[in-house]
Amino acid sequence: MRIKIHVWRQSNRTDRGEMKSYDLEGLSPDMSFLEMMDQLNEKLTGNGEEPVAFDHDCREGVCGSCSMVINGEAHGPKSETTTCQLYMRHFEDGAEVFVEPWRARSFPVVRDLVVDRSAFDRIIQAGGFVSNHSGPKPEPNSIPIEPGIAETALDAASCIGCGACVAACPNGSAMLFTAAKSAHLGMLPQGQTERFDRAKDMVDKMESEGFGSCRNYAECEAQCPKGISIAFIGRLNADYLKATMIEPIDRRGKMHAQ
Amino acid sequence: MNRLAAIYSSNLGKKVIAAVTGLILFGFIAGHVAGNLKVFTGSTPDGLPHIDEYAHFLREVGVPLVPHNMVIWSARIVLLLAVIMHIAVVIQLAMQSAEARPIGYVKTKRKMASPAALYMMFSGGLIAFFIVFHLLHFTVGALPLGEFQEGEVYRNLHSSFSADYWYVSLFYIITMVVIGLHLNHGLWSLFQTLGLDNPDRNKIIRLGSTVTTVLIIAGFIAIPLAFLTGQMPPVEEAYQAIAPPNH
Ligand code: HEM
Ligand code: FES
Image (cartoon, rainbow over all chains, first blue to last red; front, side, top):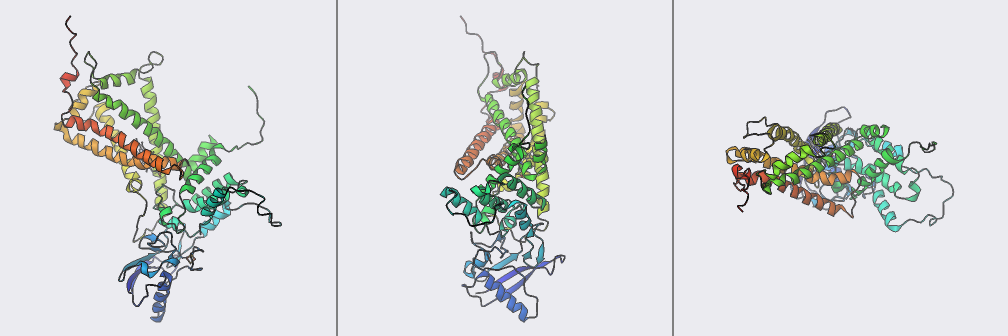
């Protein structure tokens, strides 16, 4: 099959960048999208041009590296599927395909389709952890967890941190990522200790990194390759409200009678 | 106070302010439509349309415990503060979100975001304009769009929504539909913002928001529509006392 592909080309962080178009022929419908990109790069290298830089690692949908907005959708047209799991059979022969990097101020383009997602790491550093001691492995069943809660926490934990939520959100908000990373700890007993501080610290960090604010479009959920629910955003909102409005500030002060 | 400052200083907190003020404004709209429907219930035996009586009642609520106009002005101040805060936070949020994506996409596709949600700023902007227009029109009587007699609500409505001023009715009807779009997203959205929605209730909250919105908007639209299509009793009749029965 053949396609016409339009790709964002930008040589470095300061370059202005532009869309460039290439014709590709002789593709197999069974190629993955990234194999198609590899083929494009072989062709470009053969012509003495710079290959298109793009992130990829596992190529099996678990690492979250393969960040591309394909025809206006994060990770392309197939829902709950990463770019690396997308195949050329999902496109029509002769299709025009637009490939762009994640667009957000907090995800600056490093080169072509590669963006710097370290803002996500800083959100995690702000509170996406539990302070347990790393001594001898505890007995696995020593802390009972209701199976439904464990499953929901695992749903949140299926976030691969790819950034599709930010890319898809009309406001460039990172709420789905922050919510998932806060919920997968905050729902479990081990994560209770820092639950409210975590919610506050992670949201504050997300905002100071320059991500937009959530307007409840649910576009993130629709384009998330793991289909993570905006229910976690509601949960984070509730935890954040509790952290700022209800959790005591002065826990140990004396009180007077009247 | 510190806590309110903390809420206001974050974007998530600003959304909470939008939700709470939006809820207050929604409460007003729901009450307003219920009161307005008195236009359909006729007049008192001595020739006072119920809607005029209701307008008078609003000014006199609580008298003699509180002075005249006290309750209505308190409500007006709360609503004014709510609308100012609502507009202030949503503009700040929108500006901040616009900065979050300085370079846009060549191609954009929306899978879930509804037009109502995407155009909240547009529908809200029209509401803001409408609020000013509407107050000048029926509260102050400063617009040359029909007769205006302070306190004679039925007469004013009859005149402004007559076929002579069909464009006034049209504008009111269109604006009500746009307010409906704002509320249809907004009502559900405030539950999500306050962390009160979850998958168990999502369907019912969304359905409830839509049904509430449709009922409210239908109630509002019925008024200009009824006058425009000549369904309402003429002014003289509405203000005519029923002659006491002959004994
Ligand atoms: C009577 C009038 C109004 C009512 C009943 C109302 C109601 C609401 C409600 C319930 C929300 C949802 C809040 C949330 O998502 O948590 C909302 C959001 C919003 N409103 Fe209004 N509103 C009114 C007037 C306005 C005006 C005058 C403007 C604009 C200038 C406006 C602009 C917005 C915007 C942009 C949002 C989205 C905020 C966000 O989520 O970022 N609204 N409104
Ligand atoms: S390359 Fe790892 S998820 Fe796509």
